[in-house]
Amino acid sequence: MLHKLYSQLEEIVGAVLLAATCAVAVIQVAARYVLASPPAWTEEAATLLFAWLVFVGASLALKRNEHFALDVVVVRLPHGLRRMVQLVVLLLTFAFCLLLIVYGAILAVDSWNVRTAVMEIPRTWLYASVPVGGGLMAVRTVEAMLQWVAAGRTPAEGGS
Amino acid sequence: MSPLIQVLLIGFLILLAVGVPISVALVLAAGAAMVGWSGYDLNLIPLKLFAETNRFPLLAIPFFVLAGSLMSKGGMSGRLIDLARALVGWLHGGVAMVSVVSCMFFAAVSGSTAATTAAIGIVLIPAMIQSGYSRGTATALQSTAGSIGIIIPPSVPFVLLGVIGGISIGELFLGGVFPGIAVGLALMVVAYAIARVQRHSPSAAGLGLKAAGRTFARAILPLLTILWVLGGIVCGLVTPTEAAIVAVVWALLVGGLVYRELAWSDLGAALVDSTKVTGIVVLCIGATAPFSWLLTVEQVPQQIAAGMLSLTTSPAALTLMMLAILLVIGTFLDLTPAMILLVPILMPIAQDTVGMDPVQFGVMLVLALGIGQSTPPVGIALFVACSVGKARIGEVSRALGPFLLAMIAVLLLTAFWPALTTALPSALLRGG
Image 1 (cartoon, helix red, strand yellow):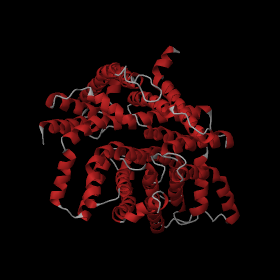
Image 2 (tube, helix red, strand yellow):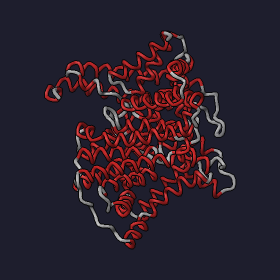
Image 3 (spheres, rainbow over the protein chains, first blue to last red):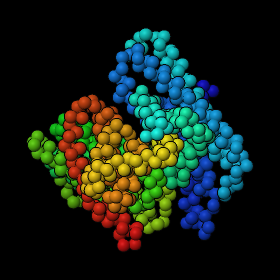
Image 4 (cartoon, rainbow over the protein chains, first blue to last red):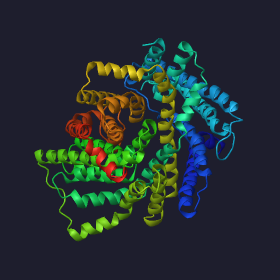
């Protein structure tokens, strides 16, 4: 159960976030035509959910290795060299995650006293999606590194 | 070029070549250039990245993708295919035309190339092969027809372009209508010619008026999506983002309550899929922000523009040059990264020197890059079509030629005939 929650974390959280974003957007459209004055918070709430959706989705795509990338060069490399390049890519991706975590966290902490326009909550709740998303992606990158090591130990798989 | 820009561009290209995800490569190259050669604070990276992603209009992306998957799983695509069969199925090369027309219908109700190509291709590639087309030709047609999805509104790339280029999304949607129809017609002409040359027999008898009417009636609910989405935007009732959520609700109602073909598991899968696409596309937009900010600070777009202008100042030659750049970049990069990298460079040239309307420029840009979606080495429509058509990329590439020529012909028409794109938005949105 716990393992499934961990391996499917982005799927579960992402689906809930998107469903919630949809619900807020529906409220916005419905309220405009039912109530005379639509609530002002919907647009801000929807963008708050969206911020988290983006980074959870980015981690989901990273886990499935589906981000836009150019593989025309890499697939033509001999096996040994390709393994090295794969490791370099993982290390660079990890550096990217660290950058999001460290500088995203600074941004989030620094903005505690900056309030959003309508709901007047600290902008930290928006910016925190960057370091948290970076952290999720870092975890998935470490997983991929462990898989890389494991693939090196099983020659049958490594020959492909 | 300043050392900063050299590091930025060369670093980016090296990272890209070794296969680092484009979003990661953009951020790392910007980071390296900022630290090493300019002394900018790295705090700027998450700040710019976040600011670029957190915009309300971008919410249309998950919504349109969600609506697209709900529609293909909820029984809408099947009914649209039946309607297309009734309309053009009795012609020579009829099944191929059904594929094109179905893609146009489906593109008009959904917002994504991948959803369109998959939903229609899975049914019609086998049918095209049965009617006499080779597997390569059938898949090539499907992949080019699928890429119409980004021209015919609603369209996710137009939403993106509206946000990054500051162009009205509603006007872009309307501007895409005629070029989208033109691409569809051009592909059908090619399919017809192939069927004639290879002497296929017409695939099905005509339906007769009564049966055709029944098919139309069955497809009325999916077709109404066009009215809600485009009609809503044109009449100013909803913003494009709100139109997208209306499409989601409509797809849920029709697929879940009327047709009862939508299962709870489909809904979950659609939510997850849309989350993933959002993560990929929007992260890429954000990752480009620090990168293109540096380009702007160092005035690179102006330098490239000056370089192009030093070669020629003729609007026609500049337009052709832009088209060549778009077509070449489009074959190597996915639509989203190509668009966000090229818009800041090409848009000033198109507007100020060539004197193009922003809507015409936008449709031309998306169409040109869209052609690259059907070509190797990188093309989402090609990949999806090959996977649903169980075809090899090589055999499809060899069959692509005539279809690509047809699309390029429409591209030239779009680039040199402003009214094709601007007539509809002027008439409906700009108050005549």
